[in-house]
Length: 246
Image (cartoon, rainbow, N blue to C red; front, side, top):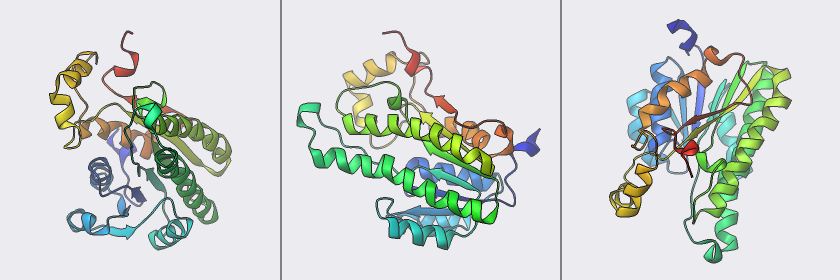
């Protein structure tokens, strides 16, 4: 059975590779045998990971079509895309500025659209069987205060995943989404140590935050032939948070 998760002979492009999850995704794919290409705006931040994995690190701004074109051309023939680049702006809805909303949509939704389109075009030209994995969120299905732009973008990305899956299936390109719940990181550690954060954790049926390694199996599933008959799916990894009682 291990062979169906084998990624030897495949090249994977991971966007947002300078962050916690992007770096984890890159390591998982490399350990499964894929040749990995890292991409992010902060090229210097990817240098240690690139050295560790023997990977190429490319500059990428997913809001800039020229940057996307240059990155995709430099990456070469890619058969796996992990669309992971994302940002968040946290403000109450009444204080959410248009520029905040636009910035989040530009990266988290428009950027994923542009990146997937550019990579899919190359897959079609090269007649490559491909897998595109959009990193969504449980906030694409449920909501929480203060992140109007982020929630809207992730909900849009979930539906865009299904749209892409329908249109790209004829080209042997599968498109699925991975929807994590809250993952413990340096960015949220202070909040989840607070009373409000602890109360949120108690509402998760498994009573804990996710860890990057909780996403290892689901990522390998979607990247590999193990999911050969899956497209348009959203794989939720959240400890039951999105189905917790109201």
